[in-house]
Image 1 (cartoon, helix red, strand yellow):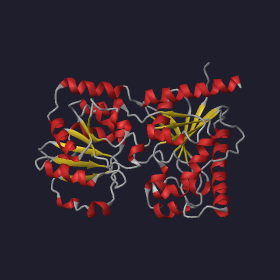
Image 2 (cartoon, helix red, strand yellow):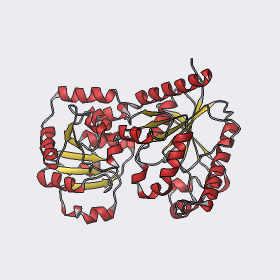
Image 3 (cartoon, rainbow, N blue to C red):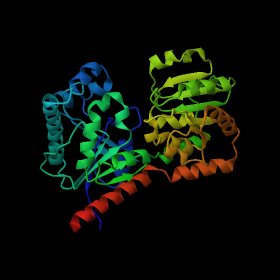
Length: 408
């Protein structure tokens, strides 16, 4: 049985955020076959006043303050979706559990419900599927003229390990998975954890834009300016740099063991941690800050070895990193710590280390692994871990849910 429906996605990111969002990747892939509406993570009054000088906020001002121009149509050869901006809501995460928090939570949900009501009317939406991607702070309750055919909750991290969002997030996520028709998770650890609360939990791992990262295999990409002065081999890490994930001690060891190579770090980082570990003392460690998803293949093109030096803790045990398939999609040898059961499944195609010493040895092995056969194997694995494959998984789960509803 085939079902035609629109898709409404609420993510924890915003459509023009420079950081990679799994929710937006799913939305873009869905947009090749369905009408898709991506609702930005709402701005609070506090967000607005602290960020109003930014271009992203300035262009949203009519939508945030007055509810005007709330739609942004994003269309390219690869995707076609509508981004939606809700009006400002109230900052409430600092409040303790209780009547006041619940009352203001209901108010924020009402604001978002009003936005979706308008969306449904303006685009004449008759049937839709709703995905809440790791944003349990809104829409615990729906009050809409058209109910979703299927409600899906997506978990991408262990919410209990992020101190700010854990304050209310643990309780809210539990309620979300209990109310969803089914839950999708990005790692086996999350599946085990949320299966205690959810009706149905399905593993739908993170993926990569294979076509985008395959560009790094081509020879015609110009060297980025930040690497103009680099003549040595490059060891690259891409992603968020935080002590919650990053094993800084290991990163320093990689730099010390490879004084004739550059350790390139591409992604947002915390200056206090950078200073704490005195990374400014290393001439062969270079932090260049975040880059857009579209820019990442340029840096991978000139990378000789890609690394995932994650620390092993409760948070990382729940992570299936996006970057593993991005690295492989660029054909690059990968060295990672064995921080999760999911990363261990790449044993044989990537180097998975159980200790610092083993990690350092594997970096040397990876730097020498340049044969075309190894590159082809990496590309083959990456080609089977794309957003196309993941969205097809989600579509099949939606079909199953709809068919089960028809039988009940």
